[in-house]
Length: 533
Image: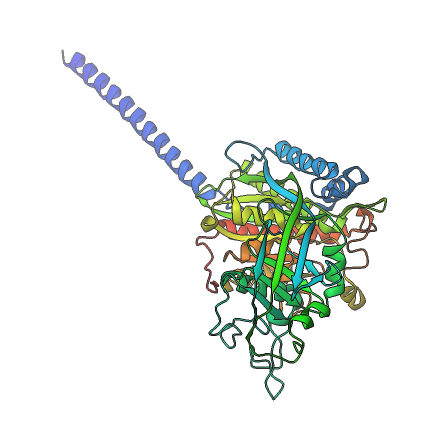
């Protein structure tokens, strides 16, 4: 009995020992598993943008550009068959990359309604004298059919309305015909009244003056504006008066008529207009009949989209224009640098972000890859996107990085022996933070020489207003315009892919990718501290 009890006790102890061993082992395994999970979590390496930037290669850029800027695409003139081939090429690239369309209906194309304005038929009589189109006046905006008959014209001097100076003080021009002249006034010391310095303002730089004076008069309700600008009249008459083919957004016809007038008409209305700066009413008969002529068609923006993983409603736009000059006098304008270089750069950046997304490192904010049409015709595709039909609400758009010509070296830097450069325009216009980020990213990854020459408000080239980023900027969306400067082949049939510096194109594209990466993945949306009205 004793031995039997001992045996039973030993058996019980053995069972208990085995159970304890199993329990201990189980707890150990569970503990190890937990540790492994924690280790795995801690060992997950943060995304390194260098890994994805390195996927941007000169070989791929070259391969794409030799197709995109080939004769097959016939210079990609807006609305022509070559441009249709170009947009289909872009669509296929995004399909092959697995990047979906930006539009909710799955269509990569945003149809842009356009019209080609032929020379309108205009009859203009002043003080019972008939004046001739082209010789005496030229219509410089698309206007609606109609007419004006009045016995007074308001002379408003320079047509300026600014904080420091206004020609419209105490003037009511609503429904009136308004005569204005080019330039801006100076004081006795030779300083401009608007700026208060020897530096002129936008009111006497034609690229801005033309639009600024028009917009002021339009906002004040003018029925028609006659701008006397003898220095550029001959050029304007050649462009707007004797040739057809002016392109505009469909339905963009103005209620206001806008004409440049020659000396003969200007001095018939006010003989001493060159020296007379005093606003006044001229009581003589003015009659106008206007009949427009246009042909309507569609072109396409191409838009692809990577959805952000954490902040999908905040969007970075990376843009380039897809069009060029087409065929002129039997010669194809391939536009390899302008803007084939920007177009393939956007594609390579998209591919780098898509690769990151497939590796679990997708951007926190969404990215819109936007190829716009009609840039060469007046920024039409981007204006349609921003002003009429934004795919992404503008209030959700964080910034636009616009790429227009980044594959060459301009004469200034060629002579200096500096090819490691890029012109940056607009980075500090609306967001100090964007400018600082751009500088920091460059120093961290590329160390390129940023040239801000064309960023100067008084730069006569006015490049800030001449590419698609401007339509975002005017809506208080921070922008950076990347640009290599003009060169001997700019807007010529000799702008061909064999002249592109693909090593530079690769490096510049990587720089823009790094900047986009930072904007897409940083904790906070950049601050717009310089918004304009």
